[in-house]
Length: 186
Image (cartoon, rainbow, N blue to C red; front, side, top):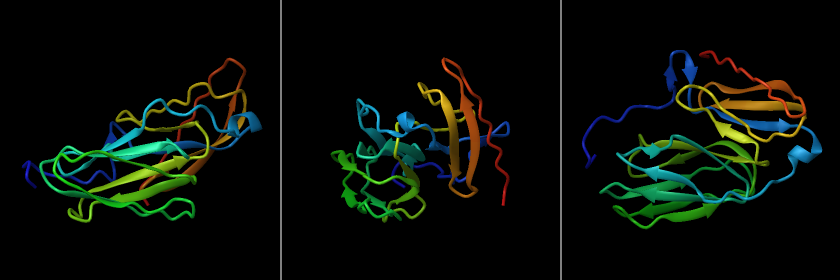
């Protein structure tokens, strides 16, 4: 690697028992919540920096752009491997500190692998949500779904190695709801 330093796996990012890089989304809920919302103001960015994809897990609403960047002084490749019809595979090379490339994914999909064909240790995951109600847990293991209309929901939480869990949650009018997912090694 041209930049030097060690590259570590990000499969399990745990701090004080809290799990980062978990994709959380609304699987089902009231009809008003399941409709597409306003578009994002800027594309979601998946960068290549230090021979790593940063961040390791990203999420976007279907039809919204993802911008792939390369900040490294070396050639990289962005190769998405969708499993859902409606999401075309991306396989583009990006020169050292090359121009960003923007792509759109149209079908909901959880944990779509993103790889660099030049550096096999580089991996990330792209999630495509049907609704604007999604998040990726931060380093502290928390997430927030702001503005979710009142109603009964099923939330999904997906971790790249530990799979998916679901949880029923009721959001009261002008209220908050708490959802705690517990993952265990398989």
